[in-house]
Structure formats: structure tokens, C-alpha cells
Image 1 (cartoon, rainbow, N blue to C red):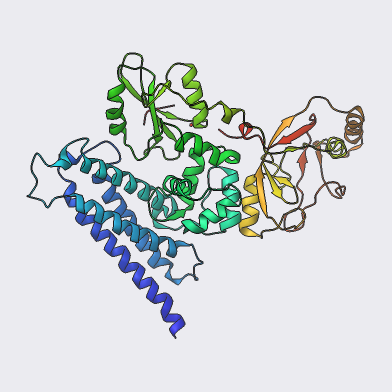
Image 2: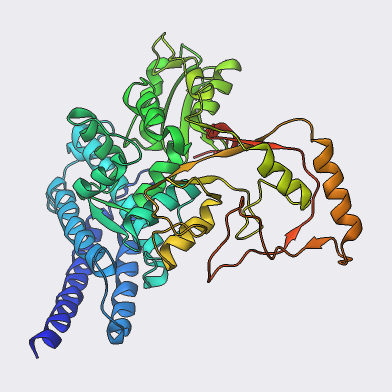
Amino acid sequence: MAAVAAPWGRQREEARALGRAVRLLERLEEHFGDPRLASSPPSMRDLLPRTAQLLREVAHARRAADRGGPEGPGGARDFLVVYLNNLEAKSRQVAALLAPQGRRSANDELFREGSGLRRQLAKLALIFRYMHAELSALFPGGKYCGHTYQLAKAPAHSFWRGHCGARCVLTWTEFETILCTCHPVESGSTGLALRSTINLTCSGHVSIFEFDIFTRLFQPWPTLLKNWQLLAVNHPGYVAFLTYDEVQARLQACRDKPGSYIFRPSCTHLGQWAIGFVNSDGSILQTISLNKPLFQTLLDGQKEGFFLYPDGKNHNPDLTELCQMEPHQRIHVSEEQLKLYWAMDSTFELCKICTERDKDVKIKPCGHLLCGSCLATWQHFESQTCPFCRGEIKGQEAVSIHQFQGKPEEATAAAEYLRSSSDQEDGDEELGQVPLALPRLQGPLSLPRIKTVALAPWEITSNPQAREGATGNS
């Protein structure tokens, strides 16, 4: 009986916590009717009712789901405990900044742009923006999807699902330990700085949503923390928790120095960078870095004369090492293996599970190759073993494929022979008994039919530039 009562007790407590959060946001919303508190996005007057409405939808969906089975650790219930506690704490911080209604004067510090209190309110508004976006991403329409959330970068998705499974949230301490298995993190001040960058909602935990944003901002994956070090920790142009208006105000002091710039994570285009700069005519413009890593955008802007003086300083850090980063490992494909693919008139670079995407992940320690999406799906629904050899997956590494020139004559002849002797008119080869030199899938996945395309030899390298790729107004 006690075992049955415990889940119901947790459900009632969760429902009460959701109700308290909605009422708290409603009371807070009453304080933001004053037009002097209006600002550029993110606006508390806009965020508070939207967050309250989403919480109502979550509460409704959770009541409807009470008949479902138990949830695992790091799932919806654990996330909501962390989220609602953090929301209450941040709401009380906002309330502490607001004087009681009827006791405000025109000289109140809160109404003065650039004042200390106004700066604190702007930072809290940014945190509320991230919290609303996080809840929207993991509970769209109120329904939980954290266990199926797809990170934008395939290697990052494979990493999270491979190490965290279906969980959508974990403590910072556990996350840091897991991250160190792939990207070593220095202890002390560096670890604290990394935590403040990743944990956008300042909850002391890391959600899959926050990790997604971080890996999009500091792509590419193989040099993730190197990128973060050079672009956030060491770069004088990086500013955190600044709004559009605050960037405009900060660059006012540099209007006589065209080429001055600062950059920040965009609060309207999450996962992308907003760059503010002083134009040649002294005007201050802001643009969004789309479709390419930030360091490439900054280098391109430097060549064009737009991004020369970070925060008005004369020294502009050299970011070319991120473009010329030596690959972590070069994988040489044996000539025998290449000949086998050519003889079947197949393609080496194509993932042999989905036959839609190129291979971009190498499983460790066995070394088998497949696309990140297939690996993530396999690990989520099957097990932590290689889908080819069933060996234990102890890690993975992002790779890209580069083409060699030339093709051995004997391989070409073998491919021509197979084409001429094939009974299939559509040009497809059915792979039945695969030579032992090639990995074979063991149920439930089977080797697919592969479209015949004549290719030259290929080489694989973990150079990130071949895979990774964000300008518009913020």
C-alpha cells in the first residue's frame, strides 16, 4: 500500500508546486505594467504570462499522464523539481528588486537605464528567457519529450545519449565527470567558468537543452573546449548576459573607432551569436552569425574591416589556429578494404545502416564507422554495444571523410565485371554474404541495399572543418 501511495504523493506534490509557480508568476506580472520597465527583448512583461501559461499546460498534461508507468531518474519529474525550485528562487530575486507599488518615484534607480538595479533586472530577464525556452523545448504544448530531444550537432547528441541515456537533466558534478571522458576540464576557476557558460538557467544542474545550446555556440565538437577557451574565456570581445540595448549602450564609447565589436549569445536566436560593431559611419549595428562557426565569422569580418577592435581594444586575438587545427587522428583505409567497396560498386563514405547520411562518427575502441544519428538511435533503443561487432562502446570520435585521387585498375575492372554479370536492372546490389573484412550488422539491423555509385578512394580524418557549420538582425 505504501508503494502505491508514494507515487501518488509525489504527483500531488508536483501538482501543488506547479500551481504555486503559476500564482507566483501572476503576482510578479502585476509589477511590470509600468511602461518605464519596458525594454528590448527579453521582456519580463512578455515572458511571465507565457511561462505561466506553459506551466498550466504542463500541469494539465501531467494530470492526464498519471495513469502511465513510472519515470526513470533524470526524467520529467526530476526536471520539474529542479526547474520549479529554480523558478521560485529567480522569481523572488526579481521581486526583491521591485519596490512596492505606490512607493515608486521617477528617480528610482530601477527606472534608470544603466543603473545597477536595472542591470540586475536585465540579467534576470535573460535567465527567464532561457528558462522559458528550456521548458518549451522539453515540454512542447505541455507534453514531455526530453527522452527524445534531438541535439542539433550529431556528435553532441551521440555523446549525451551514450553517457546519459534518456535523462534530460543531471547535476553539474555528474555532468562535469562525464564531459571529462571526452573533453578534459581543468578544475578550479576554469571549471567554474565553464559551469557559468553552460548552465544558462543558473540552476546548478545541466539539461540536455543547455548542452545543446552550448555545443551549437562553440562548435565544432572535436575542439569544443578549445573553442570555448579562445572565444569566451580569453577573448576580450565576449560578453555574457547582455541584451540588445546593453550592447548598443556599451559600444557608444567606441563610436569614434569603427571596427570595434563585441559578441554575445543571442537571446532571440538561441544557439547563435549576435555581434555588435561600430560601422564606418559611426553607427552601431548588430548581426547574427548564421551557418558557420563564430571564429570563422570573426575572421571573415576581420578581413572585411568590420571586426577589428574587440570591445574597443587594439589587440585582436588571432583565431586562425581554430581553422588550422591539426586533426586528432588520421585513419588510413587499407587498399584491400577499398577494393572490396569498389568491387561492389559501393561507396565507402555512406553510412551502411541508414544509407542516407555520410559516416561521421568512429566508435571506440573497435573503430567501426557510422553516422551520428544512427549511433544515437542505436544507443537509445538498443544497448551500449557496437551495432556491427557487439563490442562495448567506450567512447566515440567525430570524423570527416576526404577524397583521394585515383582508383586502382584492378578495382575498376572488378566493378565493371560485377556490373556486367549482375541480373539486376536497376543497378542495385543486394549485400548478402559480406566479406569478413567488412563489419556485419547483427539483428535487428540488417545491411541495407546500397545504390551503386562509382567513387574514388577515400580517407577519413577527424578534422572538424569538413563537417561543421550561423548574418541577420538580433
